[in-house]
Length: 129
Image (cartoon, rainbow, N blue to C red; front, side, top):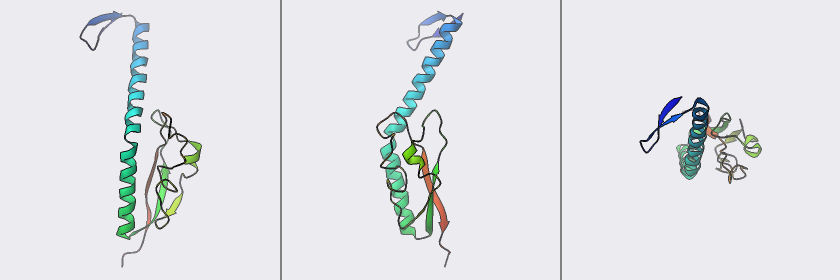
């Protein structure tokens, strides 16, 4: 037997089996809430990606970018369309968000609760003159 305190302050006695179910329900709730927050942040992530790409193009020192797929976990599973771009190297002059840089326009997870987890970073640079 366990005693738990409800969010409203009421104390309640529960069995071990009930406690395990409560634990699993809470874990599922927190995971879904986290995924929803990540989905809500997608427009901001896209804005930051566009900003970074523009700055790298204007700066003139970045030559190529590399696309990295983050490992699947409970927060996101990469779709097959996005995985085609994993480990690709893109010339900065041809780089375009949604086409050859994440977030990709053809992502299969776009209208689902899943999240594709990709980033891109500078890979090579022009020599300093």
